[in-house]
Image 1 (cartoon, one colour):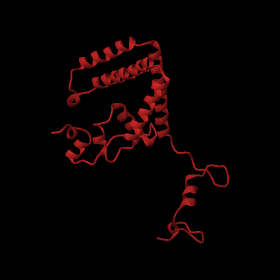
Image 2 (spheres, helix red, strand yellow):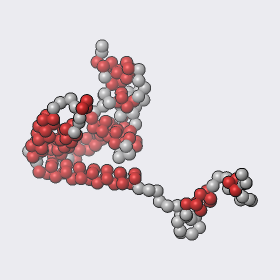
Image 3 (cartoon, one colour):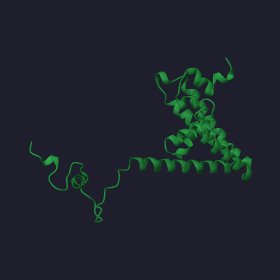
Image 4 (tube, helix red, strand yellow):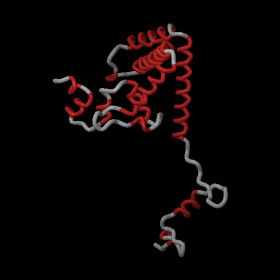
Length: 196
């Protein structure tokens, strides 16, 4: 079996699946997949959720990430960027270990002490990073949490009450239902008013 058929688009063709989500998980980087998933959840612009119809990769996300990396190379000290990236990766693995610790039953593959060891290891390694990297990473993480909280709150917020088109007062539900009723006729009673 060739390497091209063992992963990516070859795997998708071999499995006979048209599901781009499955196929895109193989040839694309982890950051690209995270960007794709966040775009599909409306945490990032929807343009980033596109999957190439032929190559089955998250091509918009990968292009955007390539541009960000090029910009970082041009304007930033890479040592700082590496420290910042390390903070993000270690935080990601810390969360993964804590999440794995909560698994039960058939979901659990490894003993809990491994997750405890992994989480402690991540915390120890974070403590060895430059202070600037930790502060920058914590700041970005705080902004991300605030943005996510705002998105969740906006998603569950009830829609604003409809206002009267003539006067700046809220419409009562029954007034609005009569005003918007598709069966209401201007020249007579509604079908609902007809005798049974």
